[in-house]
Length: 373
Image (cartoon, rainbow, N blue to C red; front, side, top):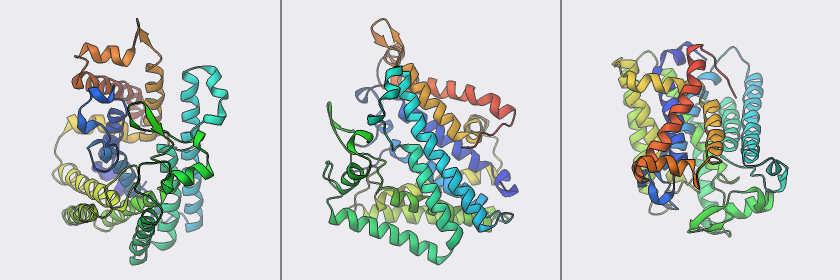
């Protein structure tokens, strides 16, 4: 980690904010009892909830640019280090799913034939590895921008040519996952009521635009590195880049719909643009104006210091809480009922889990302990 990275409070705050918001979004109680903006859009479109995970991938790319520009390491050593870290994240992601199953009964630990092999951490690991390697050997150059464009154009062409925009098991993304990892090891997406189909929103093919997504974050990280002595210019450039990407994303939307499940190019542009704009605002607030926004900074830094560890903790905590019953009611629903059993109750429950995770991370923050995955 470079001194520039340490100096920029905004990076750790944004990283922590995204993790805290991921916990909020992932822990709503019942789709009919949550604020619509905290619910993922079923297919085409964009809600606030759909912005959180891509924002974390973007900031991961920004921070990766800082570490990959560490000249104390050769390219080959940096490549090995990045690959090793990505593989660790992938393994932890699969183990996390496996352990979570065990919380619901020891016998489920032996049901390997239905263990999900994809997911948030698996996507992060895969995209981190390939984006890091591309960035290391291509550098923040016009060639890298061209590579991002080629990836996204090729991916869009595949979607157009092979039924990629349909919400069905015949979608090319679902078909590849079914052929490579099998339907039993995939997420089954709810499409209405109790109806689910074999479609994974973190599918193998859609890692392609995910790689481009992280690369855009890396380019923005390099922009910060180059302008670290004049943060006003950095804020201006990030704002221009962010605004341009948002416009491009919504311009493409009629032709290539913004869709999180498919991670479409328009989704990449719109969400990277929003993340860049958010980072620009935080840079202005915290690193230029030095605003004393303790209500924002202190809680965020706890999550920002150990983001993936606290995400894993929240995942297991969520699974454990659902095993608790108060009478004949599961604990999340019971807790939600204390606050009206409506949208406010659902939000209160998710915020309570954020608070528990924050308390779990606080000793690590106070002792400056960083657990890297």
